[in-house]
Length: 135
Image 1: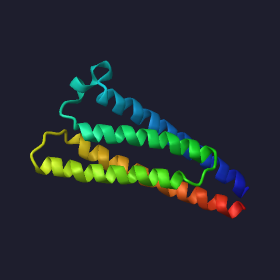
Image 2 (image 1 turned 180 degrees about the vertical axis):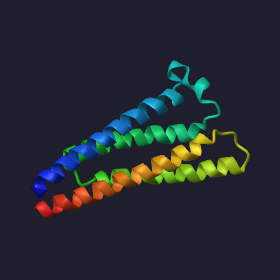
Image 3 (image 1 turned 30 degrees about the horizontal axis):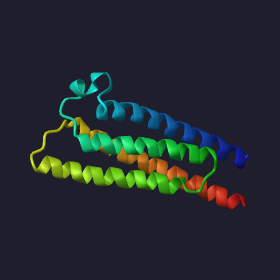
Image 4 (image 1 turned 45 degrees about the horizontal axis):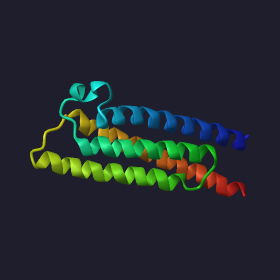
């Protein structure tokens, strides 16, 4: 029964990470590459934040694949994503402090993205731990 529960958890987490990655890819690439005139709707976006989100979206997709295929490197990939977001947040705060223009919603969005990424890292860690116990 435990193995079945872990399998359901694995696929649920992988699906969530992949959906989150696809949504992030769509939104961030739209901003970076100005698909459909998105930039005009977003106001004072910060380019390096959008690029960091785009990079993380690809890492989320890669990690989702890794979770489905039971790869042990998924925790590292998601940790790199968390690191990128933390560095981006620090740079964003510096951007604000030096008078750069921004949207206040970006602060909440970055905090949310960092938090959800840490949840992904935690889930991947426990999935990896359960795989190691299977052998």
